[in-house]
Image 1 (cartoon, rainbow, N blue to C red):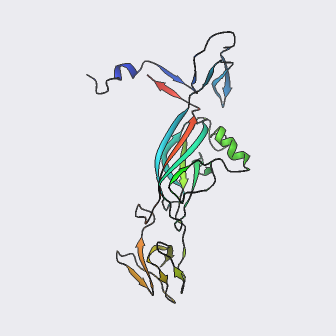
Image 2: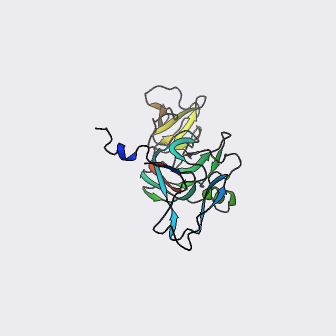
Length: 250
């Protein structure tokens, strides 16, 4: 017996590409099955009564991270239309450590293009980001994520997020708050483990595991490029979309 009990049913029987139309009526006087070229692909269907497009969704976990544009596990087919984006925050994003999230897609040339504006995720809950206000270019890319000239018609699009660390250089004689993050000692990152006023000079140094005393304030070194984040936010990102190129094997 096959490992997959449905293998005989699913494997190699039917292959077709979309977008896929769904509905109960496919034949009749109003069902003129006419194809058009859309981005070079004959996939559009006109006058198909009582039918709509099949919608898909992809989800992934997102963690507050030091990278400015961190790749996610979501890859959308070329020509897809974004219907909605949902973010379920399970651990709030630290306000000191940049509690905003912005969603991008990657272009062929290696650049990124924003799909949403920054969204404050400073509380646990459900968020629904939209396209950037007053940006017709972003709205067009929601309709067709391959609209940008640097993305080819047949290239899938990687979804990225920006939840990078926000920090400032250490300052002398400054009142620091618990968990506040600073840079010092040639760009190293430190988070405040005890609130208090910093020293008149110097500041935290080194990359050891021990606590660093800085007058009344205390610090720990951490590597912001790894998962070693203090109070890092966590969320589930879901993108609902109509696939531009949809292949079913079954």
